Length: 182
Image 1 (spheres, rainbow, N blue to C red):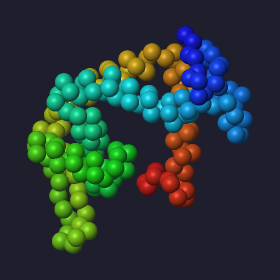
Image 2 (image 1 turned 30 degrees about the horizontal axis):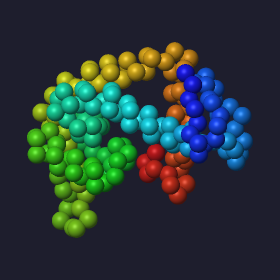
Image 3 (image 1 turned 135 degrees about the horizontal axis):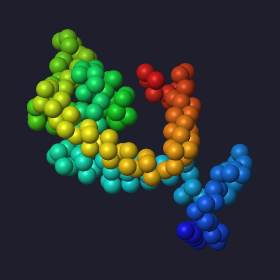
């Protein structure tokens, strides 16, 4: 499959098997925005969310953020709000809104520790939430496996290791932008 560059990107025609990353210099000469790692991963994540995660979440009347929080809470049973924010890789506002919706449905409870304005919030999954998680998880695993299995075993291993490596390098302890707790 060929992909033609837009006029702003030049006149080069790129074949799917070619990689503009192979002979990449330190300046990123020749990289177009469509070949940026951040662009490609963002597009992939959005496509996977729509085509893989959303169908099984919607089957159980869940949004993707709701499913994500239930999936994080189920093994732990209880997590501090701040830890749930970190693990979900979402912003506090989205986690807060999502938790309130889940609480309204009886899937989680939110407890406050202390009487100060900066009281610690703890989030727990309810029995109803656990039961729903147990229904969704087999479909989630099957859907995720179906996508992963589109890759050859050596591609799976290389992608997994590369993603873990890049993530580790981006959240190195001591960096200003490092994710807390990792």
